[in-house]
Amino acid sequence: MPLWIIFKVDMSDLSPEEQWRVEHARMHAKHRGHEAMHAEMVLILIATLVVAQLLLVQWKQRHPRSYNMVTLFQMWVVPLYFTVKLHWWRFLVIWILFSAVTAFVTFRATRKPLVQTTPRLVYKWFLLIYKISYATGIVGYMAVMFTLFGLNLLFKIKPEDAMDFGISLLFYGLYYGVLERDFAEMCADYMASTIGFYSESGMPTKHLSDSVCAVCGQQIFVDVSEEGIIENTYRLSCNHVFHEFCIRGWCIVGKKQTCPYCKEKVDLKRMFSNPWERPHVMYGQLLDWLRYLVAWQPVIIGLVQGINYILGLE
Image (cartoon, rainbow, N blue to C red; front, side, top):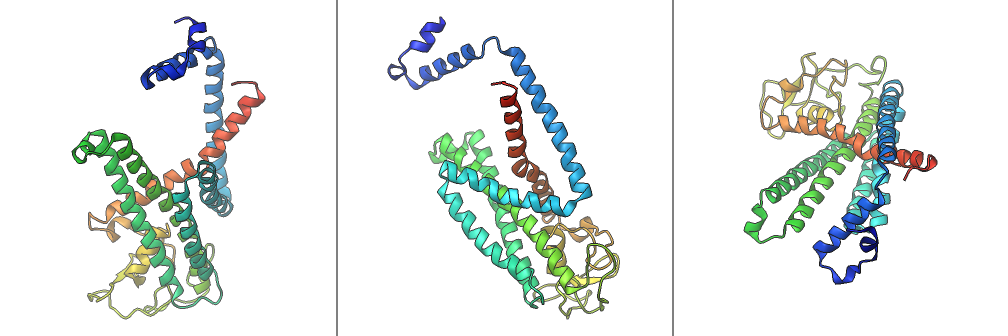
C-alpha cells in the first residue's frame, strides 16, 4: 500500500481489525530505514542492564543495609506513582490499608523497650499477608492458565476479562508478597536486636536460657518431645530451641536462614519436611527474585530512555 494512502485513510470508516492493520502499516512505514538506529538502541539497553546489574550486586554485597532500605522504599513508592497516573483506585485503596497497618506494626517493632506481645503481633501480621499473597498469586496463575486453555468459555467469561482478572490477582499476590517480606526482615532485625539474643555482627548481648525463645524472648513451656496444643517447640541442629511459630516466621517471613542466637545455618529442608510446606520456601525465593524487576527495572528503563534522548535516538 502506498505511503500517502496509509497516512490519509479515514480511520472512522474502518472496522477494528482494519484499523489495527492500518496502524501496523503506519508503524512500519514510520520506522522504515531505521534498522541501524534500532540496533544501537538495543546495544545501549543491553549494556545498561549489564552495568546496572553489576553495580547493584556490588552495592548489595558492600552495603546491604542501605541497599535493602532503598529497595524497600522503591518497592513501596514506585507502584504508587503508576497507580495515581493510571487511575487504579482499587489498588490505591488496598495499598493505603496495607501501608497503614504495616506502619503501625513496624512502629511497634522498633520501640524500646519492646512490649512482650509485639513479636507475636508482628509475625502474625506478616505471616497472614504472606499466606494471602501466596493464595492470591496461585489463584491468579490458575486463572491465566485456564484462560490460555480456553476453560473460561465453560463459564461464559470473555477471554479478555478472564485474563485481566488472572493478571491482576497475580500482580497483587507477587507485589504484596515481596513488600511484606522486606518489611518483615527489617522488623525481625529490630526486634531480635532489642531482645538482645541476636545482633547482626558480634556476640549476643544476653545469655540464652534453655527455656527461652531467642526470637520473641518468651518462656518455652512445651518440651521438644511433647505435642503442643497450640504450637510445638522446635530444636535446631545447634540444639537451641524455639517456639515453632517463631522460628518458622523468622526463616520464611523474616528471610533468615541462620539461628537467631548463634547464627548457625538452618537446614530448611529438615525444618519443612512436609512436602506441602516446601512450596512456601520456593515462593519466598521467587519473591526475592521479583524484587529486582519491580524495584529496579523501572529505574533502569528510565535511564535507558534518558540515554537515548540525549543521543537523539527515538
